[in-house]
Structures are given as structure tokens and as C-alpha cells.
Length: 94
Image (tube, rainbow, N blue to C red; front, side, top):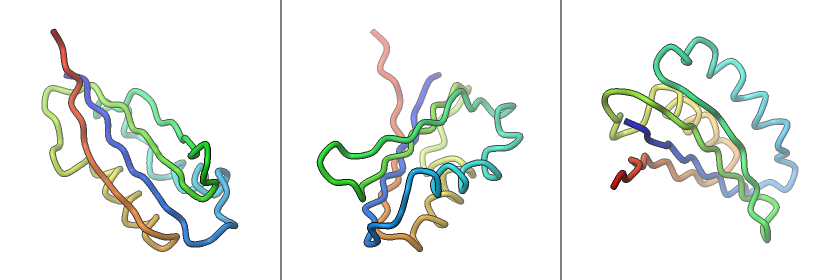
């Protein structure tokens, strides 16, 4: 099953840069490829520079409805930078 975890940060600080987010992701993601992590991507809102969305793409037998351990740790860490929304989405197959 394919699913995606989305962690969106609305930063209260204009100094939050993509590099900071990338550095936070490095140690968190190590070793989790074996749990089905396919890709991690960072997106910035086209209109609001301080909005960042991190997408963790997974392939696993079961979806973690509350989010993966990586996603939960990352979301908790990012709360120090601003408002965080964390959700999991399952790919629809027809």
C-alpha cells in the first residue's frame, strides 16, 4: 500500500530556511528506508515564504494512521518553529 505523510509548518519566524528543515530531516530519516520510506520531499508555499510542507512517501503493508515514528518526531521538533499540521493520506487505487 502506498501512503503519504504530510507535515506542514507555518513558521512564525521568517528566518526558517529550507536548509534548516533538511538538517532536521537527516538524522530522523536514517535507517527508516527498511520500514518502507520511499522518498522525502520539501515544498515551500508559492505565496507565503514561511510555509513549508514536508512529504514522506511510504510503501508498506499497513498505514500508520497517526503517522510514522519519523513523522511524529519531525512534527514535534518543528513545533518549536511555528504552527504544525500533521496528517496521513492513503493512495486511492481504481
